[in-house]
Length: 394
Image (cartoon, rainbow, N blue to C red; front, top):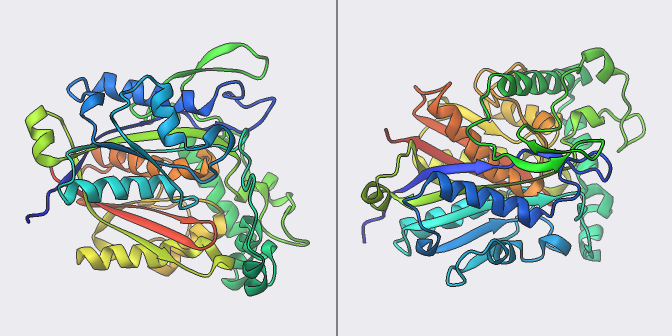
């Protein structure tokens, strides 16, 4: 059997907003409503793609309880979409949205279907990180304590092991916010963000069109004065951590022959994907083995990649990954997160892996239209890394 090609027809997302009960712009909006608003706009923008022709929906979510209980299926049904289209809610912690894309892409390449929706969603206000979790005691015994595999302590350990200086990490956060603000102001995100009604700090209704977490007033001096909440005399502060966020994202993936038949436009095809496991006490370096693996599968080198979208769970892990891979040495980065990263845009866990691919696609259509290859990658809780490689096709 000849393997089919999988192309990325379109992708959209909500704005990433604060997961805050008083100031979060979606604090009174259910996250399934946010996700189906993204679906609605995707189908409206691509009228030749009919919901009933979708083979299946894969939806990534890290914390599947409360409002996000089987959110892949329930959001689809709540949105009024065809019951005949099945859905699979997927968890790989932070890479969940990317895992959804990989599952859909591989199904297309294997000839199981021609049209898929892959999505990612998370609401860290209404479904707090780790909600309902019951950690195996044997995990605590293996790694010293459960605290040693929680996100903040792992970021501190990465900073300590790689002997990172606070000012180096602060520079990553500074430029992440500055680049995100510049991209926002230049309208770079307009093609990917679906306006959705929310509420401002005073409860006034408005259409949310921009990411809420971008810090326009960030300074090196203000960051230097901050303290770590994770460790006494630690170096990982709130400014160097991706903030608690809510958001949703979705893409239309299609076999190339079906996309051509329907007259769909596309720029990128799925070239390869790779999941990788690593020591959960330094979970943030998971993109290193994942990227090495995905490039080896495709037979290309790190220098062949023109654009990287690397999730900034923490400044420490992002900087270590880029240095160890030989991509970048210090911020401001030349070809990584050129429209800013999660330190500025927020990190709605299961959504981010999908959001990285959507932003990568838009960057390769515009600012990096000469790049042949792009990589999207992120780390994940408990030692899950994931990376996807995308190749320009026209």
